[in-house]
Image (cartoon, rainbow, N blue to C red; front, side, top):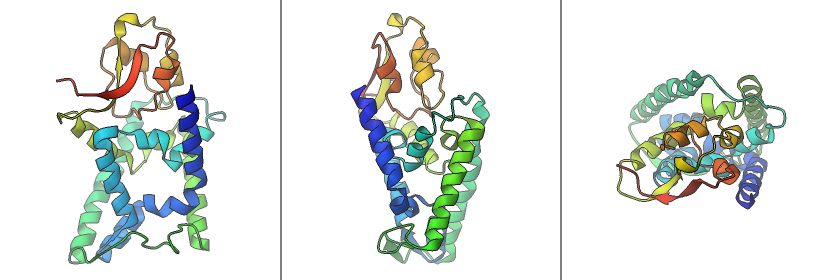
Length: 244
């Protein structure tokens, strides 16, 4: 369980740093910067997340994401699993028009004029002023409400604007002849205890994927909870080549 203690510690630290980093995860500032022809820090962050996912999938979501940190802190109060898989589609209906909006913004501005990593921050700090603090608390309220209404990691499943970038990168890495972080399992040793399913923070039917010898799932954040919970240690989180 040492891995899970380290993971949860990093998530918690990331959450406490959220007032500093909030604007670097802002979908709105990418649009605002686009209309001024500025590539903002959030634009660069999202691009980095896509590239990161080519090797590590959605590990960011399970180890570093501040919103993920808040949602896992809420687990004692939010004990229900998300069973309605249609909720996962909501984020794409948000993401696609948003991407089109970003393209339109830069076209309106006549292209890219500059790069400003600290765009709209105060000396690199996001929630330094009143408007930043109000935005911060509104985001916290939104994440909390979604978790309470939908279940564990409700935001991740429904409206997360960062997840599609990493899901796209994860899909792409399956086509590339490079080793990447992934889950594998030996279904012959499975005793169908379903402890892996019960511990999954993303409410995935892990035992079912084990039985099918296919651990790929776009909603999997590679946290390793299933691997660390399995009494038979038949699930592994390691670097492997994609199976053709």
